[in-house]
Image 1: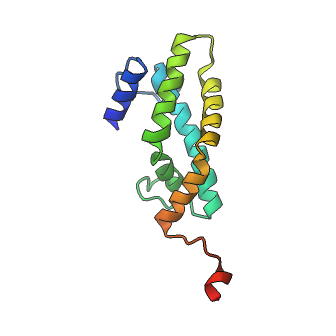
Image 2 (image 1 turned 90 degrees about the vertical axis):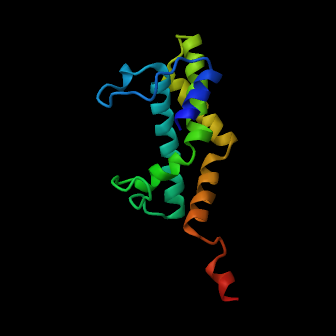
Image 3 (image 1 turned 180 degrees about the vertical axis):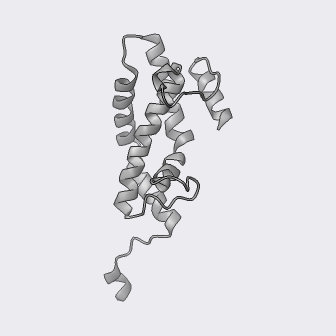
Amino acid sequence: MKEIYRVEADRHRLPWQGRRYDRSRPEGADIPNQAINHVATFVECAADVAVAAVGALPPLGFIHEDSSNAFTLDIADLYRAEVTIPLAFRVGRRVCDNPNLDLERTLRKEAAMEFRRGKLIPKMIDRIKELLGVDDIGSDAQRE
């Protein structure tokens, strides 16, 4: 993951000192770290929807075992390199270039468009079914 952060920072010409933020003062972080925090929240929300759609239990995670939404966090992490980090750095660059843009608002709009365009939630649902070995064949079809 560290390499992905570095590559995206270089690609978008953003200074990168590593993943740093203070949970008690998230607005004190630099633009890339604030952007990652916001996008991670949006991707987690999409994962919440996908987990609920499949009927999976959010606390039953594989990696994030100590959280009440561990499975949601596990699913969101599957999209960190593909969605979260690139979106955060791309919009972070735009905000650095145009300080009049509100970072969170701009990220929310971009995330909504990207999630729709990339069909993120349906992809997550399919991935969850694959991970859990869920078959889409209905019970009626199985009885025939």
